Image (cartoon, rainbow, N blue to C red; front, side):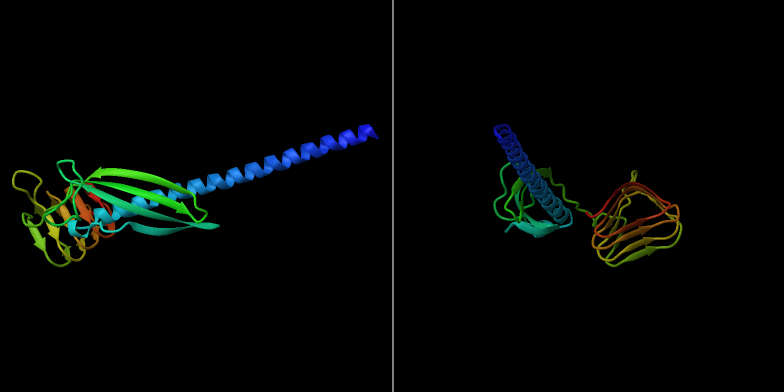
Length: 222
């Protein structure tokens, strides 16, 4: 009888240990999931604000209040809050919000991701900012959407500086021109095909469709 009681006690002790280990592993897994979710939310906030900065004029850059958002992460949700600190060329923090006459040269993004269970993680990203200022000196300037349907060669003045600037609307290149410059599509999409050649860059604020072409550099959005 004593031996049976001792064996039962050992089994009970082992059962308690196994249960505690299972609970610990379950809690650890839940904690890891919350941690990963909060990190993903913080990173999503960084990506969202960078996309806004890339496609905004100086006076429209996010500034006065944190940028926020919510992500679905079943079985819960996560949110992010991003603050932006802008810097002058001297290295000092920019006083006030950016404007046409107060353009920052760098930005520090601080993003905090938070799960619905309260787990938080913080990420930072820093980058220099280079404004794209063109249009006045472009070879072709248009205030509306433009379509190029003929074969032609647009030469620069001693270099690949024969730029095309479209202020509003989409750009469509359906023939086989050669443009020795950069194409800027300020507020529209870009479509190009039929073995056309752009020796510079293509910057578009909307979608891009590229077929059978050569482009030195491409970016979307800008």
